[in-house]
Length: 201
Image (cartoon, rainbow, N blue to C red):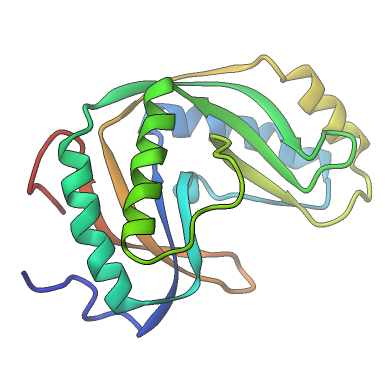
């Protein structure tokens, strides 16, 4: 197999993720648009960048290690059946009153199992085990400061039980990302279909 990583830098910021479907993405994007006019000091995530991180790999990951991980992910995906995840609920880490990250909940028992598969693949490829527990969510904003955050906090409290739909999860993707002043750009390295051994794009 010719590695799809050959064209990429020797070291990259990388992670494994799943993306919501278009309908769910539009629903979440609509919610972000509602929050924009409240003028909080928040960096809102672009709809095209919405994703759920199964496993963050690091800021300086060597391409050769990603090649090994790609093989492991392909094998693991073949053993995982597609499923649906519920996208509902809004909150913040560590809490709405003093937030750093604003999120929408994205959950399914099968999603936790998929994250465990991604973790096992990462460890087998030489990455250190994750220190923190998996907390499934879509990050929708990163708070830069609490200046003028009151109205946004109120809107988040009112939306804590908001529903955005059910998203099919039928693949997981290995990404590398480039950070810039205008926000991150994600480059797809490999996408493996769940339950489909050997199928990749």
